[in-house]
Length: 125
Image (cartoon, rainbow, N blue to C red):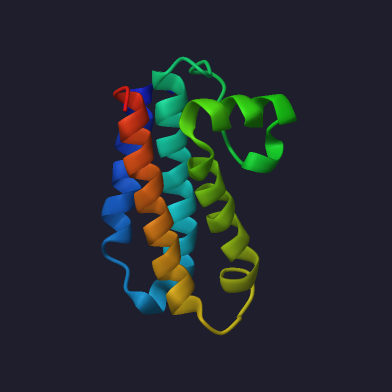
């Protein structure tokens, strides 16, 4: 995919997320993860750190060298934020732990951080 295609998909997920309320915490967490992966791919492709035919999917699929390269180029906070969204999934999407509403709000806050960081890095910020 091109950076523009990832940008469009991330925005589409975010429009859907805007329809979710606190009770929809599973959808918020899953949607935040999917939108975040598109924001990360958007910036990786925009900076030519990965080719259009190789998309970032999950941090645990990265080699140590790829992780270090991406952390250096993007700032480690972007992938750490993505890691945190991923870490919410077993407890609040696949599980039924208390506090799902707060976890859903946290996922949206992390997504906001990732989106802002992706935009800043893609424009040289």
